[in-house]
Amino acid sequence: MARRIVLTDDLTNEEGTEENPVLTWHFSYGPSNNQKRYTVDLTTENYGKLEDALKRFVNVATEVEDAPAPPRSVSGPRRTTGRPSADKERLNSIREWANANGYTVGDRGRIKAEIVDAYDAAH
Figure 1 (tube, rainbow, N blue to C red):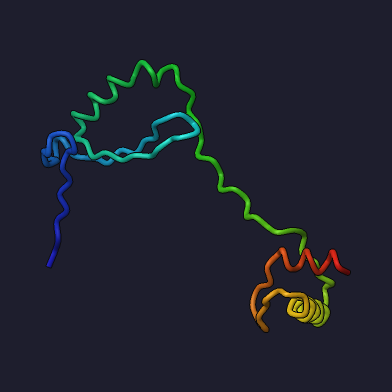
Figure 2: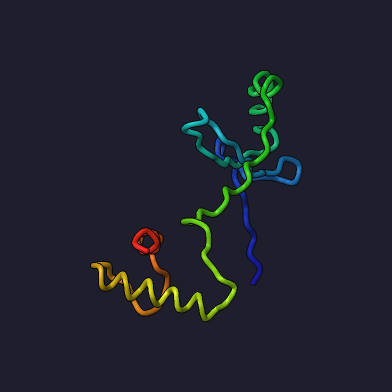
């Protein structure tokens, strides 16, 4: 069974037609420290009205590119020797030291950066 999706104008509840389709428009609004993102479904006729209302401001505004994703956070430089067995030995040493010094560390999985930093500071 085929389904038909019908978009309606958010202002008028009017269904889009071939001559006056409803399109979804995305925009951001607000000061840079509290900017919110919005979408609105408008017929091309109502979008024209929105565009006319904003034209004076858009003409003097600066277009901005989407900001690139921030780099992933890392807790510090990776400490590797290039030898997997040495890395495993180091992790085992950290786990053993942490458990003996009041930290709770499992036999497997990630070791919290604060524990690794405490281990490094102690050695």
